[in-house]
Image (cartoon, rainbow, N blue to C red; front, side, top):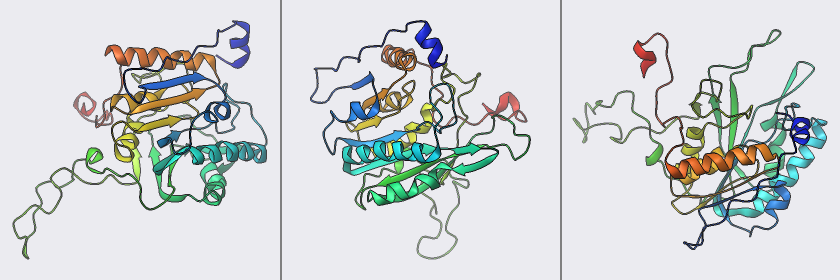
Length: 300
């Protein structure tokens, strides 16, 4: 549904989900709001993780296409306010793709890199999110990846590797000589994931699919939440969409904050959060193998 259709149908702007009064920190807060207006009311150093996927300036139904310079100028304002909110031990994860103009691509993470550096952040990883399906191009190779740039304010940042370890390729491999001869050579909990992540993108057959055309898979955000925050920490998404980042935070006992300026998406986010709290929300489980038609039952 595009912006004109929303206006025609007189969609009511949803109210913020009430904040819980039972704990020192709220469960979460989601709001239909411009992100700069939302963030100005939050205190400095508030968020342990800020994770988002801003519009790519492609003219999709939830964004207005502008010149690249104007787009970058607006992004700079949003990023600067995010840096103000970031905890000294926090992380900022900015997931983007390519800006396309007349068949030429401009990698947005490269265009945005100087903004983050000028604001004093340090790039820890340039994570490649690979997905196997998407639109096919006719005059260039079909795009099948986007990037997540992981930034921190300093060298003392929250980092928990154990919750996101993946199975080792050779879990029974042992040292064959030296003082550890005969002992397992790898960590029994699994290995450190690489900086290339494969998660299915949210298309029509994905259990999380909503009307949003570019939806975050929850399991992708879960990996960031588990590794870069502790229980009770605040996770914030300034371009919340249908709430996947907030859901990933709530699933793991974090505090989820989010805002978006499209009423339809905020309503969907609220519905999904309510379903999560009832135990009824379907999400793709972390660690589930990628479907492979060559294997029995697709490898599932």
